[in-house]
Length: 274
Image 1 (cartoon, rainbow, N blue to C red):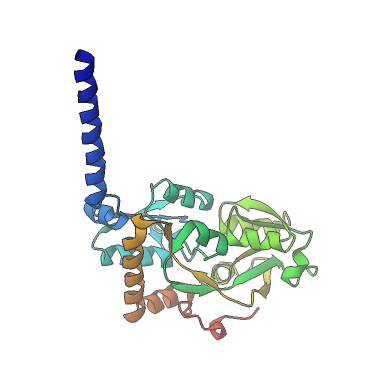
Image 2 (spheres, rainbow, N blue to C red; image 1 turned 135 degrees about the vertical axis):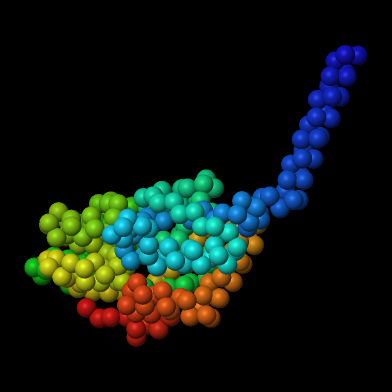
């Protein structure tokens, strides 16, 4: 009899726990947007060392195009932004484990990434630049990367593109590091966002580097988030925020502030030639 009572109590407890789980989901706590609003905080992951997207100014303050985009989105959602900095290859892992709500870091939309993540509407359009030492005459196009070595962030679209052209890639953590490796001759070339390369060269006019080629088409830059029903309302809300930024001129204003040009429009003619 005692065993039967104990079994009944255990069953009742399990039913109560299952009922609680159902209530949890029904209350919307598994919804990312609802969770963010409940906390009053949006956790945004970025590198923090990729000028002019995310970097530290002379006062060691985190600034940049994507920092301000993140602040706008948080304000649109009526929450506070919480920026977390980390190495590129750890940003997505942090989002996968739900430590970060969004990754806002000049992320290119690719077929492989789209299989794992949902992307917002694009908010920027950039080409990829191919950079070599100023005295390098062997590499003048992406096809010349066959059998050469490049340096790029691990798992980045730039590393993937270099490997597609037959290069061997060495992983690095920052744009500055990859450019220094090219200039010192440790690697033959690097690939990176056109605007980031031009920003680097404008700040360092004495750098022994040159751009020899750009991709013909611009990459779409958007904000990735975890796939599934959990993020559906967040995706819709962030798209609304991006549309509002575009409509009120904020996107163009921020782009001109940090890049010196409007890269928020898909017009290819706005891109610069090497």
